[in-house]
Each structure stands twice: as structure tokens, then as C-alpha cells.
Amino acid sequence: MIDIQNFKKPPVMRPFEKKVLVEPELILITHATWPVMFSHMGVNDASCSSSAEIKAYVDLLKRRDDGKAFLNLMRNFNQTEEFQNVVQTALKNVDYPIQAVWGEDDPALTYEHFSKELEKLTDCREVHSLPSRHFLQEEVYAEIAEKIDDFIKRTYRSLNALNISAV
Image (tube, rainbow, N blue to C red):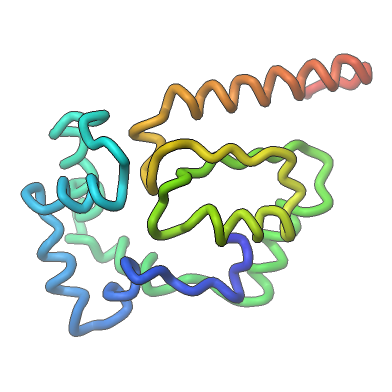
């Protein structure tokens, strides 16, 4: 989500905007139901996480306020031109390297759509599409760590070759 002003929420996020749908939707997110959502939207292979790890999403989502903070986030996306400019300042015409790591099977934030935003609106040097969905950090964490480590090492070597300090 980089083109903030033109972002359209994917279908899975839309029920949280409607007061009549939001309470039933939140009530339905339980330790019993979340593993189904996790395996269909979150990862390609749910065996990558233990039952306790999967259920922790529910506990964190509803923590202390029964999900009110989550609903606030889902309902109140800042799509102003001012915020768009803040995001652009951090991602375009910058003097630091940027890479993106994406779940190639993410059904909500599809790589096919958002890779165009990455290309057009950022100075992202590299985009890595990994075999996972929305919660790729749960499934392909080793691959993500490898991509980050490699990116840092290559960036550091480039700085050294140019005799520039990394700090």
C-alpha cells in the first residue's frame, strides 16, 4: 500500500467498515475459527506454525479492548495527500537502499497489483516474491532473513568499495 490516496481495501477488509457487520465479524474471530482463516489467507502451509502461535493472533488482535484498536485501524486509513507526501518522502529520491519482500500468493495485497506501485512510487532496488501469503513471516522466515542479510552485506560491501562509512 504505497499509493495511499488510491488504495481500495481488499474484500477481506471491507466488512470491518460496516457497523452492522463488524460485531459479528469480530465475534467470529476465535481460537476455533482463526486457524481456518490463517490457513486460507495467511500462509500456504499452516503446519509451519504451532496451534499456540496461530491462536496468539486472536489474543493480540482482541487484547485488552476486544479488538477496538484493530477496528480503529481497519476503519481509519489515512488517505490524505499530506500522508501520501510523508510516505513518498521516505520511499522516493532517497539516499539509502530499499528492498521489498512479498508473499507471492497474498490474496489480499496481490503482488501483481502492488509491484506496479513499488516500481512507480519508490526507489526500491529489489523485490523478492516468496512462496507464501499475507503472513509470510510465519512461513518463510528463514528466506526473509536470508534476503535481508544478503541485502545488508551487499550494501555494506558497496559502501566499503566507495570508501563511505555505514554509520
